Length: 579
Image 1 (cartoon, helix red, strand yellow):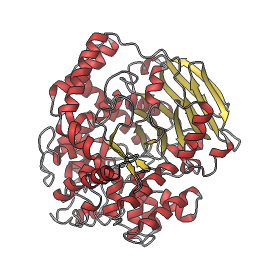
Image 2: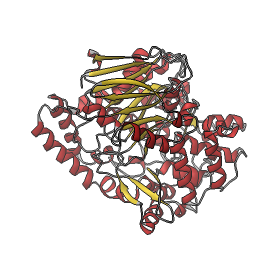
Image 3: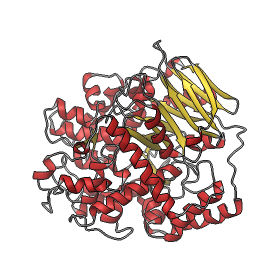
């Protein structure tokens, strides 16, 4: 990759430069976080002119390696006020890499109230005025159709949906997947940053792209085969996820007593079979039609944890029907009809909002009296109001922290104003430490302790006890920062934690791609360096260790059925980043 592209929206100017020396060896999250730390004023308003938005494929982007199609997007978050890296599938990352683009930066903001489309191809970058029909409430599905017809059926597309246009703090950036459906860089409100730059869409066409150069092709292919075998033979990545998707976790967490219910008032429910992964699989299989039990979010995905969920007539409703969304709506807000949950999921994709934060916001709104319990139709109507937006739409689109404040609640499940996902930190203590300490705000993907606490991958640490949790969260956050820098899907960790040959093959692929001789210690050092940079940005933005805490109610409200509380001291929590 040799191109470092800057698009200045104030001047409508494009600069295509050589990659700055500091960033030559970086990719993905390592690159986005270092760039944000280097060039974004930590105390700036996230929606003001001084914030910058950066897109970067990972170190293995554009190669034939399985699971290597993830893209990192970075900026200062308007939701949390912290640094943010948000991660997505789709086609965009691979097209960037094949065109030789190390990173694309969007900076500045236009004075006029117009939205634009940035078009990238082998000839360079152009800035076009956005088609009128995709502005002002147009859903992402329709916008993808319009842009695909205008620019070509096979182009990659990144969109700021209606929520991004309105600069709501839950706005995501939505990406076209290989079949024209939607994947999202979901968390942290980066769609609002894109909307603040008046960029409605990025369109990328890799026709004629030279592709990536592999320094040692034979070694790369050999390592890629070992790596793929590890993914396919592991019982989670090779069997459970392809069959049931991430929703396989509903029954597992419910049995463990860690499935947050009724807005975190308990850890187990008796209606879990209404929306479990097993039920999801059976429903898709029975309905047939356009339904698919297993599907990849990007080319080269062999885990295939996604799916196409159809209606009763077999017509496609939504894909990437993730556990976190199903949990928040089903267990948190009591919506027991899987079809209702699917239509809400589709609406959130169409509007371009974080399906975790908005789903948790709905559950919080139920507790606060804004929405009724067990009413999927009312929840769907509230989400659709984001497109207008009505006052209720703005409140729900503002996210969980806003809903809690509007409703006068002290039981608001957020860290740094980002919604806590689908694992109760009292009964799964390792993930609680990740929620509290990750630089991103509450984020299970930053250090997925569920792997070891619940799935017993990479060993076992009892989720109900404090022993071993600090080390577990620390090590997984370090490993995750490194994985995010490669452009690999996070789920590869589920296999390589148990299969050493898979981990070695990942390092071998990087070495063969670039002609390097990295070791496992180098990968660990990479992860540590990323976390240190992110924490440095947050410190300069005014965050301290006092912000690395869970909501207070977890400390004194026991979580049934185990009746445990969050019992880590501040000193113990601070040990997570003692490295």
